[in-house]
Every structure is written in C-alpha cells, then in structure tokens.
Image (tube, rainbow, N blue to C red; front, side, top):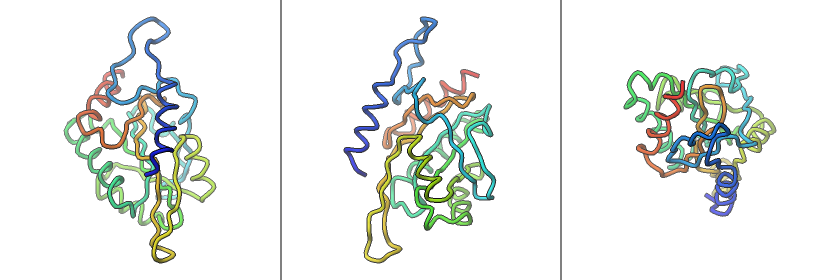
Length: 199
C-alpha cells in the first residue's frame, strides 16, 4: 500500500476526531480512530451483485463495516474479510446485527458473479458492491479511499494499491470509526460492541 496516501487519510481522520460530545458527556472509548462527525463517508450508492442500487439507508438498524478492496487482492482483503467473519461469529446473536460491506475498486475484473461468490466465502450475509469505474471513483472519493492500478506481467495480472482500513457505522448510518488494517480482532470486537450497545 502507498504509505503516504494512508498517512494523509489517517491524519485527516485524526483532525476530525472529537473528544467530547456536545452534551458534555465523554465520547465512546473506541480502540480505532474516532471519526464521529466526519465530513466524509456520509453516503454510499452502488449496485450490489444482484444489480440493485444500494445505499447506507438500506442497512439502517445494523452496525456496518465498510471495506474497499478487490477479489484478487493477495493478503489485505481476505485477511480483513476473514477477521470480520470471525468477529461476527464470536459476537453470537449480536453478530447478526453487524453487516459487512465489501466495495470493489477493481470493476474491470470484479464481475457481479465473482463478487457474490467472493463475499459468500467469508459470510453468507456479507454484501458486495461495485459499479462502473466512474461510480467506484465517486464512492472512493466520498470515503477518502486511495486506489491505483499497478501493472503486472500481463494486462490482466495487475494489482491494485488501496487504502487498507475499514469504516464502522452506527445503526443510524453515521460513520464513527476508522479501523486501521492490522489492528486485530480484539480492537474490532471492542468497537463493534460499543456501537451495538448504543441501540
């Protein structure tokens, strides 16, 4: 991943971190970066693997974990998806209230059929979103997600550098936490429990 781009995103997230709520009560003690009130990641409109246009409002009532990646990603993406699936299972009944959303930044290769099969490998309830290159570009811009195609030995063997992080949303569809890749299952579990307890 491009460390510079990741650092810029993280720096922006930290600038938007709030220490206290307006009512004077202490903010939740998230283990990840608290980005409550951020002026980005406010909407997400892309078609799912069935061709239906989806938005954050479709998942109201659930805690969302949104991750941008691609199906041929060798390590970061499958690791993130497997970790989220494991955490959902560990949460027991509450895990049903956690919705994983995988957004492909490789619309050229990630067909609807491939995306559907990919997320199903981790959790039957995960949703995959993609769209036209322009739609994906707009979604990534809204989330301040960096991605860039890196040529491979052949035209179709390229890789994609991309922001390696997950965004956590509360049950009202508001972005709350920037979860850095590699933070671990314990960190994700703690933050999901806080958001689940708020509703």
